[in-house]
Length: 471
Ligand code: AMP
Image (cartoon, rainbow, N blue to C red):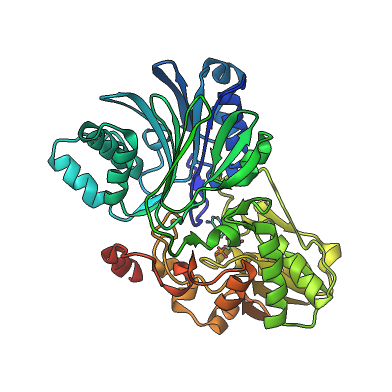
């Protein structure tokens, strides 16, 4: 029997890190942190713990609660821990690519967990291999690890080492790291991927999103700045090094559109608030006469709330999502409705029958899910289905951690909005403008990477891939 993976855009990973200056169980806290970052990656999970001079690590394919149990967590005793949940963007989906990575280098043991994607990883890998380096995995993180170990030999401290590495690597990265004495957090010079710092009593934690700090009862202190390296020791000393002049931040705007948990606050913006605001603006940009506003769970519900509040059209639930459908499941027979969408979503007939429904979703990527959902709503009696998307047409592939495959597969890259409306079978279709989206996050183009919507990449990207992907 064969298992199929749902054809989906892949998402970024989640990282966590904690240094214990009290009497906390760092592995357990990391587990809770990963649990709340699970939405950022469901393929593999891992925790590394510093125990004296040794680093203990457990990682495997699966969700955090599938990979860890009490016995395993009890074995992971130590004073500093980092953790990772992964959804592969670079490198195959296999356990060798699971993180954190643990390596032995001249100064002892080190471990790192990385969220993001390097655009020059294959060039760096080639150069390192030409110098005799051996790689065990196919992910970018091992390239970073290799560079750290090489530059550490040339420098007498970790900060200069990391600065040298940052000069070499290009792309997006939010990294947590265990060094022989400290917990380290660092963010790429444009701050494309999020990373924040929290405090619980005398202990400190880094997390991709503030929701993970909430989960362990830590107080949010601040976001790590773009290009910043933060090192924390067991005395509670925090050392910060900024490697870039204050310039444009380029947080991935898709974090607020889709990735981040709505209760997370990233770079001062609450994702839930931004999504509600996006819905309000969308209602002004694309008004429609209707009886019900609903969101596709979970991505569309916050914006649907905003659309309803702005338009005065009642808010309700049109669809129920089965929360227990994981990423991988046995594909139903072809006689059943296409690719399992009917297993994941089911309309509530009594809510939609005879009604003009405005359905809000955060994005249309390939268009396949949206088409099937519109069809389901109509089959279950909706009189009209007006699709509203709380972000602009997704036209360009991402090189910074969101694997949107090839441009060819992005429905908006080659179709007009009217063609897409036709393809998905909706009565009308409206996308939020880029200006509207930026207004919803209280930002401007200097503040966010909007490349997936306008092709304006914040750095040179591998054009060959882009050319190929334009197909
Ligand atoms: P489709 O119509 O097949 O393009 O699917 C659109 C749906 O995919 C929307 O409900 C989005 O919330 C969802 N979506 C957007 N980005 C991602 C992602 N990175 N991983 C999984 N689903 C996503």
